[in-house]
Each structure stands twice: as structure tokens, then as C-alpha cells.
Amino acid sequence: MQTQTVLADHPSKIKKFLELVEIRTKITSLLPFLMSLAYLFYRRQPVNTERTLLFLGSMFLFDLTTTAINNYIDTKTNGQKLPFPRGSAKLIIYLLLGVSTALGLTLAYRTDLVVLLLGGLCFLCGVFYTCGPIPISRLPLGEIFSGLFYGLFIPFLMLYMNMPSGTFLTLTADWHAVRLDLKLGPVLSLFLCSAGPILATADIMLANNICDLEKDIAVGRYTLSYFLGTKALSVFAGLYYITYLTWTVSVVLNILSPVCLGALLTLIPVHKNILRFKKEQIKEKTFVLSVQNYIIIVGAQTLMILVSGLMGISS
Image 1 (tube, rainbow, N blue to C red):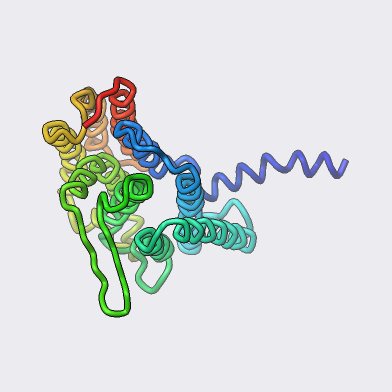
Image 2: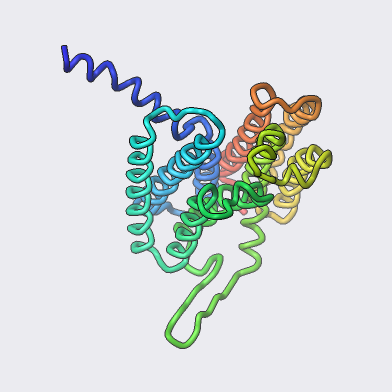
């Protein structure tokens, strides 16, 4: 009977864990990862399986860690309860952080200083997003940080580890000097290709902050939407429209194939969601529209890049 009780309790604990780490939000890290794989396939670049799996494990587990930390800190002030007792939640956070750090350090050992520095920067920003004397989440910087760290750094690290050495940059350091050789062309191409996840991720954060504006002010959190005021909705829409412009520019510059222009058709459902969000900004009702737009935009871009690779079209 005791064994049956323990086994029956497992689904409940798993459900609580998935609630603690908000597993439904992890699309913002997994889709950029998949988009990067599709781009490598499109460019006919071989994928280093060991590095890629180490990166996926470290990145995904740390994403879970930052969300758990955020919920652990926020529940101190917002009156909500954690799925686990606070002691158990803290232990889960330490375990996730420890495993993700170990995988990240192993990856850095297998690669180079660039991966170590950027990975370390991601870890610091993830931890101090909610923790510290002045958490990033309480400043008008959340949209910028989330957009760059999810939308840009994930694709950059994936491509940097799997493409020929020196494609994007070369960093050398000795006792006398540190030398950074940045390749502007490839870096610009990366920015254009990553514009979708960068801007769509920023819009998820912006939509969240617009919906929570009054609650955030009550707890001393002054996000970007507080400073933008009524202009926040225009910025919300504008970021999506800029994404479609960057896709067109990427095709014109031969960074992506003309097949990727097919993703422009997603402007129709995305525009409808923008109009719906402009009418009412209710967390339980319309915030999900920003998540839908993210999946539509980044999912379509990933699919079109993959189709280009399957058709044998390469830049």
C-alpha cells in the first residue's frame, strides 16, 4: 500500500514541478534553438552533437532555474503560494542551478573562452533578473534583456559552436592584451535572422508588464510600460511589424532564401492578435495573444528555413 501511495503521488509532484518552472513558457528558449538547427541545416553545416546536447541541457535547465527563482522571490510579496513548501522549492532551485552550471562549464571546457564568457553573462543576468538589491525585473530593461538573451544569444551560441572557427568573431587573450576581431557581415546577418525571436520575446515581456502595470506599481516595480504610458501599445505593435521588415531585408541581402518570404503571410493572424490586445489588456484573457504571436512568428520562420534546406536552396 505504501509503494502504491508513493507511485500515485509522483504525477502530483511532477505537475507541481512543472507549475513551479512554468514549463508552458519554455517555448521562448526551445524555438530559437530549433530555428538555429534549421539554419545550420539550411547552410549545410554539420552539427557537433556533443556540444549541441550540452548546450541544450544547460540552457533549458537554467531557463527552468530562472523561472523558479522568479516565482520564489515574487511569492514573498504578491500573496500567492508556491506549488511546494519554500524549503523544497529552494532545494529544487539549487539542484537545477547546480546541474545547469555543471553542463555549462563542461561545454565551456569543450569549446573556448567566448562560450565561457557569454554563458557566464547569461547566468549572471538570469540570477539577478529577480535577485539582488535592484533586480532587472523592477527596471525598464526586462524587454531588452529577455529579447537579447533568449532571441539573440541562444542562436549566436548555437551557430558559434557549430560553424567554422572565426565565422563571427575571434577572441584571443594573453598577459599583455585582449584582442577581439569581430566580423561585421556575419554578425549583421545573425541580428537580422534573430530579429523574430528577439522582438517577439520582448513583446511577451511588454504584454506581461502592460497587463500587470497597476500591480507592479503597487510593489514598486517600474517597468517599461510605466514609462511609455499609452505609447506602450504602439511599441507592442511596432516590434512585430519591424520583424517582418527584417525578414524581407534578409531575403534581399541573400541571407535567407526567397522561400522564407512565405512567412510574411503570418502577418494576417499576428495583426488580428495585435488589434485584439489593443482593445483590452487583461492578463487572464489577452496576454496569451503575445505568446500566440511568438509561436506564429518564430515557428513560421523556423519552418521556412527548414523548407529552404529541404529544397536544397542555400545562400
